[in-house]
Length: 592
Image (cartoon, helix red, strand yellow):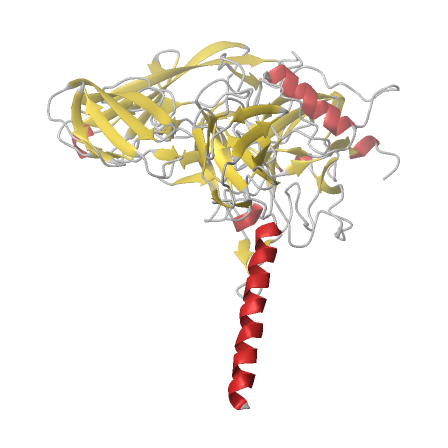
């Protein structure tokens, strides 16, 4: 009995197997496509070949087609194709067998090539190195991943690292070239290096306006004109001032005060002497006057009777009516387009001033960029010095966001309607403190596209304005209307009050006492500004001081300058940059 049951079971099992075989022969299995990308997205650079190699199943006697934009671009199992324009392309892969078909959609992102970009900061007058001394060149390279470097000196290979130490004993001019190569291309940068036996003295006397070549100084009869040149000698030099070719007895300081006795033209001459053998001069981007141990620079001076005050009359505006200069430092809001920024690619100084004036008219912010960036505005009348708060400037400071702007004022002494006379700083709470630098200068250098903007100051410090591409993606933070590859700004620098909380990681730009724009100070009647709206600081013309710190005693002013006063950045918030919204004559403001 058990024997027959076993045989019956085997028969049933064998019958079942045969039945399954018969069923499988009647079922059609469609092709199966397995891409070599998990998300079906492939990235390639323009002009480079994209290779897509899927694996397949059930593809006996299969026919393949790759279709993009309605056109078949390949009939091979693998796709090898070159896209010549950037963008995202959707490609359909279809596999047909005799009895079935399968499709897969693939996305190909074609990006721009990213060859290396070289930024190498060197003086515009040419790099000068003392014979026998080392000078290390450290370029900033964008798209440096996988790159190779080649330094050549007068055509001969001298290095293959990302930095190069230059040292030559023989005097002369050398051509140094850096070639950087990555998979997308090659870039080259050549600089001239003068090997000298001594470094030159460099002197600059800052002009009242950046966009003028005339460096004439104007002074009102009876007033003292103070002049302070910037000298790039780190050893202890000696100075001598001369007037109309004759040395002035006892005038041996860097700052000189000249009080003409009559109306007319004069020439002040500033001479620097120093022992070059004991000097290690700091290279700057200022004007190179000479390469000897004694250097002189002439300063034209015109003494005149002061032009009359322009009284406020019917039809005049209490607000500034003209932006005379807009020279911001590089910053995240510079060259930024879009509805909020309002910038439309202005690339001349005139257009930039018109852009700034339009924004002030609408009480919209104008950013001055990093340290030293400034704006100069004028009025259709003079603002009198009445001893109280004579004018106001609106910024957008609030409790933890203060970006102080130094305020300067000018009287139109020569009466030409141009701010080419002398600037007087308004003394604020930090004026005269040991940590406040009154003779500060920063040079900004044009970077490559989408790179940080390097700077160096006259105190031996270097840094950069960070590019915050996720928030402000414009290619350059360097003002497009400044044609030179570098420019230097001069003024007063405050010790920053920026700090980061160790517990929260949040940054705070803390307030200063008084006397600064865009700052929650004691000169602000209402300090409550949680929404970062336009809020005014108030200023007294009586706080104006000369370069030596003595009161300027101005009866009135015609021009106002605001200049970013701190050189600091707050992590992901970027550089501190003063913002201004409005300038108002408070003496004639009936709504205050």
